[in-house]
Image (cartoon, rainbow over the protein chains, first blue to last red):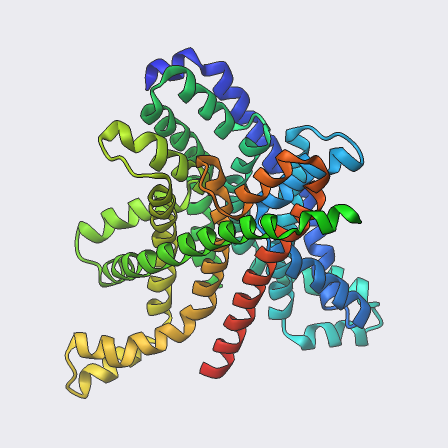
Length: 214
Length: 217
């Protein structure tokens, strides 16, 4: 195992970076899309609610692989060529946004209704009330489940390997086929993934406990 | 447009449906296995047997924090190094079952923990043994709380079977890839079709979960 780590350190490092970069990009954009969708879902306007629901139901109920493959295989045929990295990251973003929308919506709904009503009655607009009163309170409720979404996101980023995204999983696959030492290679790759996901996972568990008491 | 009609010729549709059948078989088998294994592990975690429960806890944490794709690769390509050789179908089932068992174990433990402590104490004070109290009082209540996350887990299982394409399991996604790799005009219709099929299965499961949840509470 140390032999592999030694011989392929640059490949592993590159894979690690790509996994991390892809996850962070996907996290940022899916947070933006997800929060917007959640706000649409509770806006009270029928059209907005329907549109947001369609998005969420659609992307929640199809495999991430299909979305990533769509951007890797179909989009280049009809529109612009996309690299595996881009296709995978776009897929990850769209997919995760649906789950984040649900998490954020649940968080916002967990804030008592009176808060919004009180804020509105002081003269704040819906958006102002959302921004200054409801969202800050929802934030604490939402952080632990959002963290868990981020962990899934990191794990799901391995789908990049299937669209030639040069991520950690992809490099592992190549190393395994070059060294024939499949067992050790995958154990090593697993350890690197755990290095990313385990600390996050324990942090979220801690926050969940710590914040629920207050 | 004519590509669409051509794409959905009987021969292609039959090929896709055969893929769908494999997807469903793998899903059902791994659901069955993971429900049993996850149930047992979840209860062991809950009753806190010294050493054993914490070891299982660590293993569950490790599996939950790994990408499923890695577990699939490992089961199919890595296990033969240890002398365990499974064919493609059973590798896929084993990988999914291991991953889902870890997920379910946590859900089941969480469900039992969420039942108020007084329930157990009250049941014990009426003279029931621990096992009886568990079976008659605690588990039925816990089950209600668990149903939405368990069904959610099954939905992701169905979606995740698409990952088994990498070990050339002839499931739905793989069948579609075979068809469109022979004729690039069929790319769009095939994506349309598999998206629709996955969506229908998962959406129905999701609705079922909502209905179950309502009728139980």
